[in-house]
Length: 416
Image 1 (cartoon, rainbow, N blue to C red):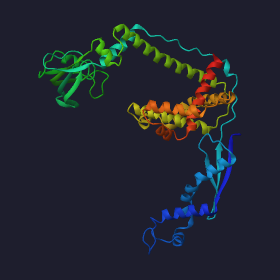
Image 2: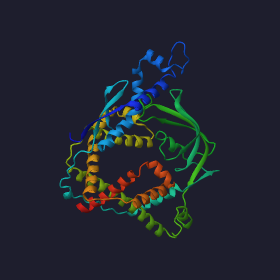
Image 3: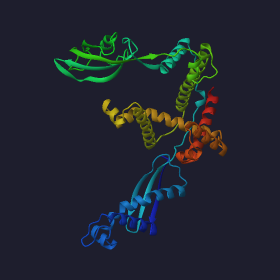
Image 4: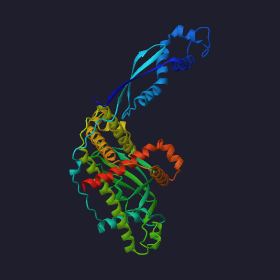
């Protein structure tokens, strides 16, 4: 393929000698030679015993990054994935590398402008507004300890309990000071319902049967729980009044109608943002199909690694890691990559599409726009401009992102 470049770079003279010397100084720290303490063996003695070849790998590690950079700068190359390095000549005098560097392949856009994608029209129903207000009231409810009265649905009963099956204590079926929300369906069917009406310090035996879809060793078995209610808490749902509106951060809202109007506005904004994201995703995917390009497997594999890393981060947010997910789904990384390969190719084509549009339209980003964007990011994350610059590392990343955003707007205008 035309975008695969092989370049050679030789490291010799003082640079190679210094790399070998550095490797020697590190290795002699652990070298064992009769008549010398650790770390004191002379270089000629070390080489006589072990051979200079043992220094080569460490010396190569020292010089390879600079050698690659030198080759890239010299030939003005732009790698799009991790270069491959081969050592083609190695001796006490020099090391010669051959780097395989993959640049962006040749891209032909095709007639992508004939793509037609309709953006979903969104609206907010009265039911959605009511549900959102209900959720807000539930979220801001006060939890009050009852001093008298009985367990009711929606209360949280603090209980001591012990389960017995076949005359033996149920493993994992006991607890003390356990807070159980009545109606949460945390326990097996029938348990929570039988707590309703119990008073503080009341004790009773609850007889139940494990359901058919329970674990093999317990399904359909009779179980007895001895339960004592230690305490009862109830949720006090706030009234729809000015005090509640202020708790929500709405200082200017005075009536329920005004609250509903504000909630409707926010819900509509979220729906429109979601619809825009779905629309843009469809536009990029469909327009990307018109991109004519031969994509190297190395480029695809690098994109796959990015996707899987993102997927792993999403799994972490759900409390599991990638290894656990693969075990649960009885699959492996190779199979996962095969499943995600079409997605990787689609993303690459979408990226190339925007890059070509940016180039064709001569889109440029000014220094002021980059500075403004960094300041905006710093404000969002509540940090300083310097810290954002340090995190980003290279302002070219911000420049590229802004350029792609402008290319997106051009693309949308071209197909609308």
